[in-house]
Length: 199
Image (cartoon, rainbow, N blue to C red; front, side, top):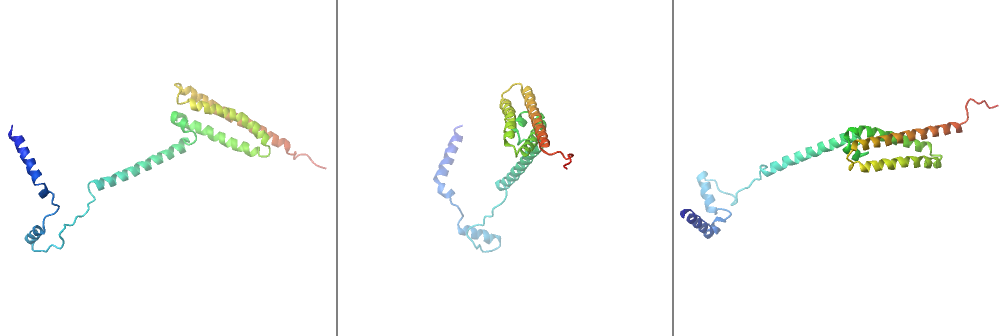
């Protein structure tokens, strides 16, 4: 048992004493000349051997990782694009992520509300006071919807809250339909009757 630590100590001492001999970066020119003489007498033109970089090991793996990362990024971007197109994630992402089963329904309601609001704005351009009156009613419903949406992540019974949100969106659509009907009646009453014959 004593022999193995003794051998280890002697090896360490030898390496420590001859450290400079181990650290020489290149063999001497005489060694290279002897090697080339044995290979066929060709003269060595340079004292340093040529080192050619290889695209192996880490370089090749690094290249493959970059390709994999690019593909993953492209797949992720296309998936988000699909979700946005299919479910309208950009319109109300919190609701879509909390209740993906209702995403399409929320998107349809939101699109219908936006179209009706645009039509309401177009029809009330000449009567801004009427638009203010109509928008205050709609603002109340929208504020209620925003409050419901902020409660959604913390609510234990999300199904009931989602149904309340859908009900609110339906009320918004009904209110907009009533307002548009009123505006159309006002427009019709302001236009002269074409059947009246002027003499």
